[in-house]
Image (cartoon, rainbow, N blue to C red):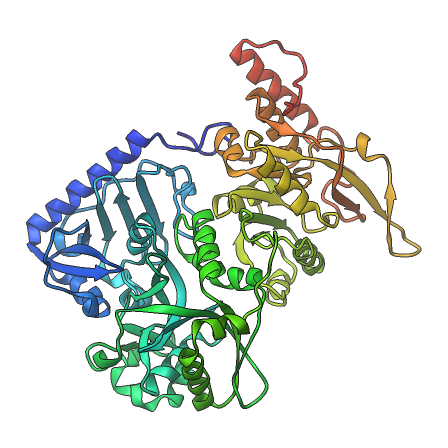
Length: 610
């Protein structure tokens, strides 16, 4: 299938996905036959996992981080991971049944979305990860051990653990956890907010340690946190604060390029807790004072803190991850921990919280009541930008002002030559940022679509805006009508007044261009059915997509509402372009050719209605 043709359905049929898995599994077994096997049984969140290494090569790299989970099996394993490399076994990975442009930065393979087969390719380590959930077998492959980055040894087989835990009703999260005999707290948030420092401070003070980076959470019969790796990662500049951990440093020769990796097993085995009940979920921030305090926080903010880095790093994480976090925060109190400068005070505050009864902790947390959006689907907002650094902050602020609680913002830089990276760094919120060579808006939007995690997808050109309350409005319409694929309103034109510098409303939105991509909210399945945007078109790719959607009778609702504010300011890409330059005739010809090829009437296409 040629993925460059946007009208092709991007989904690979499940039999082809199963066939590819079978081929790779056969190679893994041949690798095991060539070198012999080394087996390890791991118990994680009540599940027995059998890991079969082809020889000792990858066992040497992965075994230490998983040593605390090893058990002597007393029952049949629920799943088997086959782990092999080509260099030591002499068995090559078969070629993939998809083009390279199906690969995403997070590891997902666009179009391989069978509920049975999971597949991911991680660029930096050049690894292939596959799992057949029906047969409960999985494969990890890498060409050569030398391509493994340091974090693969600190947190090996992360993608396989993620898929298997999700399948069993648990969730792998990017978070830290510490505790004592009374239970544990889960510490979540983006990198650099103090998770590792807090966790290691508690470890140094004698508390129980479960994780500082990745862990597993289960909800039944009670919310519990489960340790996944016997390692910790720390910024090298922080090592001097923890001299007692220096003997545990696993990579002392590489600290100029890598984080410090601490191997905690077996030296700290007495403090390594396998599993503890959860008493609270907290999000840290650095406070400009000596003491550490717990403060109330909004559930939506805590939810996003728990979800953002998890969604950014785990292939196929998405709506299910948000639902799990919702359920967790419904059952466990959430707080913000304002970290003081005194490390001893941090551990004392955490120990004090753990000594409290569950009701006392809940009283500290602010519980939002009513329909606060905690159940709303994740919306992935794609902002393509070309030399729009001056507009980016306002565009992101406009998205946040929608007050929609489940957002993923993706900025795709289409080869800008201005200070766009500086503009991204100055944003007040985490975004996923991708850069590509200048290829046009269609290509930038496609890049964003392939890396989205949300069930719903929205687009906002960097110099446009949404009206107040637009995103909740469109999301509610999709939620109220599951048969709809798209909700698409109208655009209001705004023109910059050269005298005042303000934008004035001009024209009738009912007469505006009917195909502005930013005026709609789309279910993911709309792009799986219609395909992506046509990258042959530098302009009018939006009209072309809607024509193809109409040909397929996509269910599109068109409310009589302004859902996009289009700002004309003299620097828009379409300013001064003729109809030929804007591809209006090419779009019409493409539609005509499709209709002739299918034997339909060659009249103008009509937009579908709900």
